[in-house]
Length: 268
Image 1 (cartoon, one colour):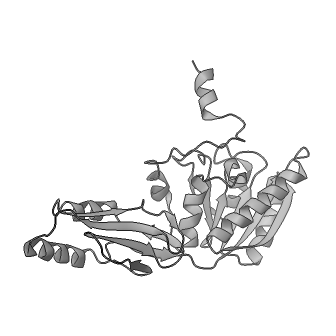
Image 2 (tube, one colour):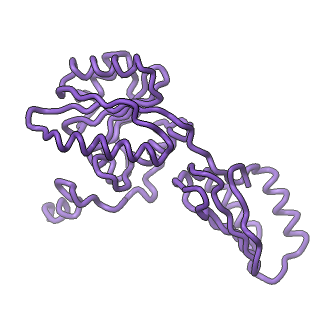
Image 3 (cartoon, rainbow, N blue to C red):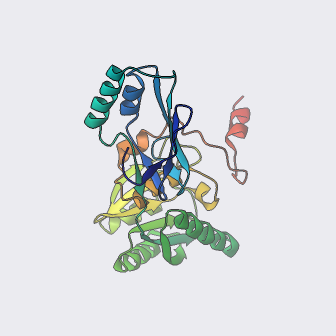
């Protein structure tokens, strides 16, 4: 067991494990499966890897199935955990800063922009991060480039861009503006819905995220999974995002213009 975790009192062959502080749960699924394959008498159940947890939340439970286990099994467990130390841990959030840039069309309602700013601020607070500024500009490369340069001069830990329209490909306004200032597009798209149209980019080690439209809602979406890892100080690359598909079909957002179920019916 790694840092920032605490064990509960053992009883009836069970010990529960709790988060010592807010963060995300870290472990390799292969290692946990290996532990549980040592002997059917010893079982370890954890929350999903990289899941956000609050301080005091139960993150796992260790259960001995029979009344006793042989010393040989204990030796095997000790050997395995030494080789996989820590077997799991809690990665705390680091207090980071963020700037939100929202692009707008002439038809964009101010109430939508205000709501997005509030939702984003609250989402960041969950990870102990702070929204230090919010800027708005027309949905054009020239204006977005100007706001990006201004934002970068403030040296935030991350820049978030909420486009007036969804990013449709790597040549769209948001990714083009990022590349024109010398940034790099790391990955576009993710196998998580809601959240498919997320853009991950970087400028000189400062992450820039083109957030999907679903992130205007406070409900869980793929943007949360990427944001939480970054706010815990973890690097995120394209391969990491591609591996998010298992469990990536999340609850649909009621405000979605075209719910996925309706799309299926239209195609029949």
